[in-house]
Amino acid sequence: MKRIVWPILFTVVVSLAALSSESTVPRFVDVTEQVGIRFQHISGPPADREFDYIFETKGGGIAFLDYDVDGWLDLLVVQGSTVEAARRGVRRPPGLFRNRGDGTFEDVSESSGIEGGIWGMGVGVGDYDNDGYPDVYLTQVGPDLLYRNNGDGTFTDVTRQAGITADTWTTSAAFGDYDGDGFPDLYVAGYLDYTPDRLPPKTPDCTYLGRPVPCGPRGLKGARDYLFHNRGDGTFEEVSRISGAWDRSHYYGLGVLWADFDNDGDLDLFVGNDATPNYLFVNHGGRFSEEALVAGVALSGEGVEQASMGVDAGDYDNDGRLDLFCTHFARDSSTLYHNDGDLLFSDVTAPAGLRVPEWWLVGWGTRFLDLDCDGWLDILHVNGHVYRYLAEPVEGETLAQPASLYRNRGDGTFEDVAALAGPDFVSPRIARGAAFGDYDNDGDLDVAVAVLGGSPRLLRMDRRDSNHWVLLQLVGGQENRDALGARVQVVCGGRTSIREVRRTVGIYSSSDPRIHVGLGSCERIEELMIRWPDGSRQKIENLPADGIYRIRKGEDPVVIGP
Image (cartoon, rainbow, N blue to C red):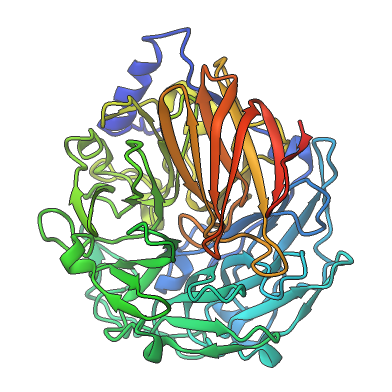
């Protein structure tokens, strides 16, 4: 038997675990089997063969969504395929698992009406018709699919009648109301202009660490992104060029994020591009200008193109501005951009303590989240390489990789605490998308991980601290029922925290839109200010901690849990 020596990072974090038996870092427990989630992802040839094409290495997505609106998060897992099956037009449905509310899930995939496509990649969730039920958008290696939620536990394919025209290889999709008309619009990232019927060339000169590998994305034809404007009548209009959110260079898009980076009340758009500069489309009242290079987020601080994959925004230093985090490929590091104000960002990866440990990891799904509810946003991301020959480590790189977890010290720096989160958390996986949400309604954020060619994993967070928290479900009026883009400002204990409502974070995936805020020792929120998507404001005072609240626009909070 070969002795596997894990890279330096894993050795360091394992050593770290011994430093404290009383850590407040939560434990993550793998509950996949015991809750009844059984699903096998398919992607490309059998596991004993190297991938032939780049799209076999990439998928897939995963989503938390309450599709039946019963107050419990359900789980959707995107399915891939093989080249042979895709060429025959074989459709593979995603897995849809209904949360029974008792800690278990029921497989409702066959009865849901979601048939899937020939090769699923990612999933975006949003209530595009404002009927109160979340709809599902599936990105594909091939024509994308939009499924309308019928409100009775089933979905209907409305792709054609809705005017969805994305038909190459797309990756992440995000709903957001960029023009403030009350109807969620849709941005879809394109990656490569290939499908199983139009395969990229196979050449013998593509190598990694001296071994032949699938070619791409560099050297292959990129696919453009799409911005679909919601007309409000159940249909969309493709407006990428006329809106200014135009992927003129056809870069290799992966992560997509709607967020108000300049604090002007409308949603800007960040697109993480693989091996090419990122985009930052700044919103000027429904028209966009691309300003990533000037803003300092197109490249790393050293001026280098990176393989931006998973993306998220959050105010990690509580200064009232949304910062940006991007995961990247091996032999690089993830990047933390600090929002300096006036749409200027600084690469603070090194001073924040995030650079050196990550050189061997390939990062995918990610999120800012408050692990210990101390009021400071931490960072989590899942990892996994793309080349099967790395099942046996080569130069410190491995195919299956542990997840990463960085605790915010509250002084602008982070510490690696992955090993303190338990063996289920650091168990190596070929991870891709990740969804975040409180599936058991106990006040913390659990993690669902999509695994390439394997079973998804549901990691339940078990907190070990005594800090307080709130979970807020915001409900808009007849317009923008999801309240996408709403901003919450929480004041307690002399600290002010901001959060925004969004579903799409990381890569390929969609998460719980409810806002989770850690309150530290505060037993009550002194002031809760909501800026709704239409610009109106609602102030709530003296809100007790440790509860799940539904707040409808203009109404008092209602306790709905735990």
